[in-house]
Image (tube, rainbow, N blue to C red):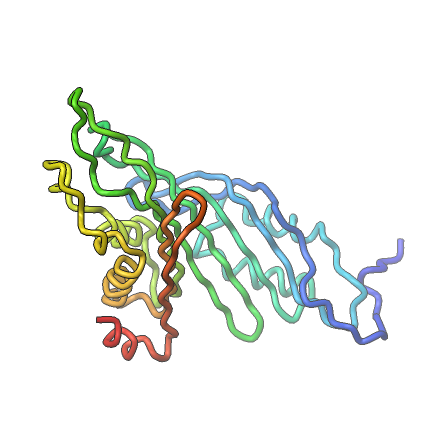
Length: 257
């Protein structure tokens, strides 16, 4: 059978992106406490197709996923991009992976251990050079509530979320990144000891975003970071975003204060 997809196309029209999306696929994620955590990801894979080709074989994307089955993680990301670019004879290869990551935490409301879910994303691109970003969404709870008349604590609820997207010079544990964010977003438990409400500015999206920027700017392995803090209100949301490019990293770090 003639391979139509690999035939030359003389119309000289580049296809910006062609590929497959929303593939549900099992992956392994490095886990600091347990070495490996198994989870299920949603995967998008696509390439920039040169104008001389009519198309590409979509099955090749799945073949590449199967080749790395059980070993899809930050360390193998570049190898997958290289194989995608080579096998599909593409100008550039791209891959996006979204997955839940679970950590065992002590619940301040129930005073017991529970699993907390963090939505994570990895995005990689490879043309002449490679680019990899890691993103994690960390839930932000309001300050610990006061005791009710029955002596039971009220529900903590869900104040908002901090979305952290970064490029890094060296490997960073997901747990380490989450811990850095929660050191800023976890509110002081002293508010649970009285009926006094915390000052409004302690919960502003602007202040939390700036505090996170200062915290992450101090990490030697982070070369670029974008921070978006969102407050989820009824009927609307508020947000604040801070971003610094790699070349201005130290300069912007000084300007944050």
